[in-house]
Length: 376
Image (cartoon, rainbow, N blue to C red):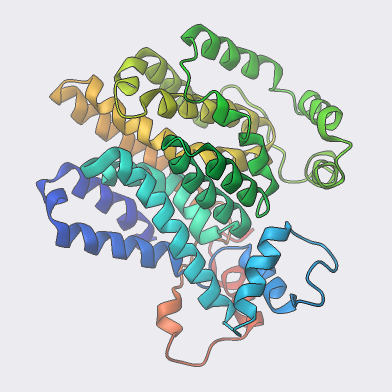
């Protein structure tokens, strides 16, 4: 638990300190975050399936017994060809993804990148890198690279990379139409109207499920996901509450973003950042009804964090300090996921096992189930 708290609180401390300009201290904290987030071992959940898939894939059976998008198959095969261990493959991939996330945050926030990480790590980083929905993580990382090219007006390359990302996680496809309007100024009244409509009409799980089935029911892969996650009463369903703590937090952020949107839009690519932050808000509403849709939030989470830190410029020095304390408190709310089940505690790190015989798959798979105080 201590390491989880240290990861984002240390970002906050460095972010408000003059030491943020110290390259040695900044690099040391960056290395700590990379090792902590990317080298998790027994903790998390999805790795159990991904490890089995990794050792099962081969060229002759590349798409046999189809269980994931084709891009991930081919990516795995490139490492399997050289007989690379699954955990070396996984850690290397997570490090590349970490660089993609950090680069986007640093590109816009510069020395305030630590404040962005302070919010990003507990709300999204723990889930993405430690619980690690691996295909989703890779897709988001590629998407962020695609956005960099989009900003540079390299449209064809950007669209190509988004399509590549969709071969790792099909949810990326939904952002193809988005990139054609995120650079344009959308009236505040329209964002407010959409926000209200989403809250009124998408609070019903049954209604949302019917709409999705109508739109995508003819696509076999998507239809299977709808059946598996939504119609069978899985845990991917949420209660759709309008008055949850998370909804109240996001409502406050929505009001701040709309109220101070000009502060954001005056910054580099500010209209683009603001629009993605608004898209995040809409996906958050849907995710309260169907938790599966929280995966869509991940694609816009970095831009939401950037927008929140850009809002600092809307306040005077004393108000800035109050706002930062507020952000730290809300970041701490993001740690509540640690106590929900077995996935995060206890935390183990691959480095501690590098120079000894590796525990068996069965031992690693059962470790957190057996030792977590939060296993349910």
